[in-house]
Image 1 (cartoon, helix red, strand yellow):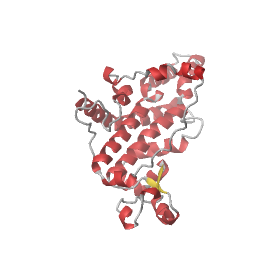
Image 2 (tube, rainbow, N blue to C red):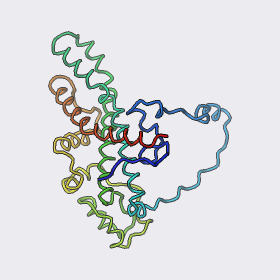
Image 3 (cartoon, rainbow, N blue to C red):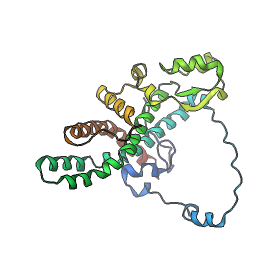
Image 4 (cartoon, rainbow, N blue to C red):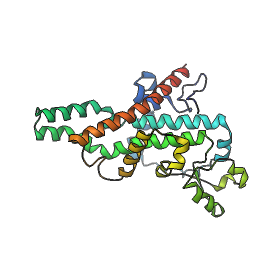
Length: 269
């Protein structure tokens, strides 16, 4: 288990991220984002039609070194969770669960017409797909962070000779001592990581240990996030079930929000 810690005396999120990464969670002035002059003047840049130099190829990250060094790995893990929290808390349905429940209550009591109910529900339907993606981002990042903190490899393998190890990785976690055991070089580590579906299987969950009720909800959301709707319907009793499920996910995420806020306060100057 790792802690969300910030660099001493640095205006940063726990992983060294800018403080504004917590803006949507805390609403604190210190975390507000102020666009740069360059961004504000983007329109002028386009009007001038400047020709930019091609970007230099990005230097390949040595993930093997990062896995081995806890001083590097810890901030990476905490940063992943912080980013996931921002996405989770930014989901429209998470921000408006009380409003959704009140709408269903009014509908059940006959205090709102079908037309009015439909209009009020429109934003929930509009954001349904992006909300399911935001929720999955948090749990995907959370599970990867837990695995990495337990010294498991979440990055896929890029070389032909490591294909058998990659097949094994798709079924069960691979501990990072295989870097040495298989004489793996940095160039053989892909920038791509294992998928969320893989981390939701039973072998991975033996390490991640999501609560059973949370696991069932996340599995359902993950299986439906590529569909047109977050749920086939969020009206009636099915809507009540949706609200209960999302409140449970929010309850799971809330302690991590508190840890992130506390860590960010510790690194403020």
